[in-house]
Image 1 (cartoon, helix red, strand yellow):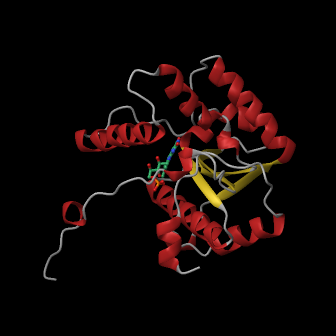
Image 2: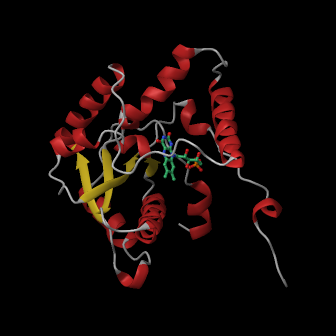
Length: 221
Ligand SMILES: Cc1cc2nc3c(=O)[nH]c(=O)nc-3n(C[C@H](O)[C@H](O)[C@H](O)COP(=O)(O)O)c2cc1C
């Protein structure tokens, strides 16, 4: 697949089929993705991958926590206050996604059902948990971001869809109960992988982007 095709066809898949991913392909995706750049080649990432029974146990506990309204407790705290323009873009995403799904503003039940998909781990057969040492800085977080996109683009090459999601790491205690992850590693982000469910309207939503002239500032060009 052409790189530009991969960039343009990737989207956040919020409903996967349960079809498993071949283990060899999964490792090929990771191997290629780790060609990502990092600060002085520090390669600050550690990847913990869950599938099969291990992921099912995480999924069950996530659903229980969601139903029980258990407060989230991510290793990297979620940001509560965003600058106005970013808050506005988040709001716009919600409005457009719910409109696409045919969910009206006050329909708490339908909104809840859509939100619940996060805690169902989007039904994915695989989740990659990207971790880094807790003492590392934003620079290493930058490297993990770079690796994340590489994983998702490499997955596209194999016809595998993806969803990067903070909600996948909202309950690190549950993840640590199922997988041995050293305490000194922060569980930064989860990437769900699998094959998209073509019947789900979640997967026909295409998010918008800012016009270039609002975010690109050309100088001397
Ligand atoms: C760091 C990060 C965290 C995200 N967390 C979530 C999440 O918890 N739940 C979710 O549904 N999408 C999550 N997303 C997906 C974004 O909402 C999505 O990337 C954005 O709306 C653009 O849409 P696209 O990925 O389909 O192009 C996350 C994306 C990133 C990069």
